[in-house]
Image 1: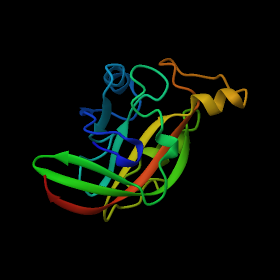
Image 2 (image 1 turned 90 degrees about the horizontal axis):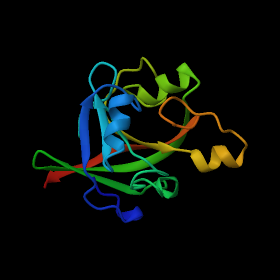
Image 3 (image 1 turned 45 degrees about the vertical axis):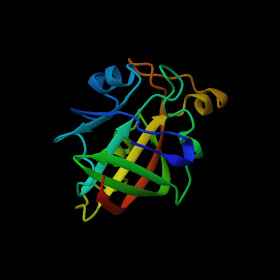
Image 4 (image 1 turned 135 degrees about the horizontal axis):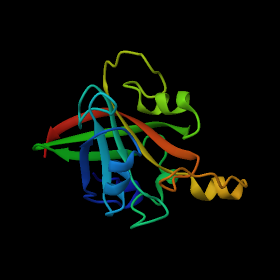
Length: 164
């Protein structure tokens, strides 16, 4: 995965069966690469109709998504997989709370923000922690993996594919 706006080039993303920020995903992120859950409780793969989910650390390990909050509307994310280059355009930002089942369902939904909706296009959710902001607001809650209460999610849509 590459995010030119953030000077991220060729970030390795490892797919695993699970859901965002579970133990398996957290262990992958701790190695300095991004994690992408798939399956009944996760998302789809690159270019798939639905929600391609990618998570990475912002404040620990290699800080691979340190500047994700700076990613704005219209910025591009490029994912290369299986000889294809998928280009996503960021369309919005949402905040996910680990303490809200509804918020987590919205993050993990096939259509981000709309649990139960049927997807009709390929989308991406790139997610990282909101530690600095939570701490600045006096919120020091964290889960068993030291994830703070909130995540910053950047939501995009697939706008182009081409041979890699």
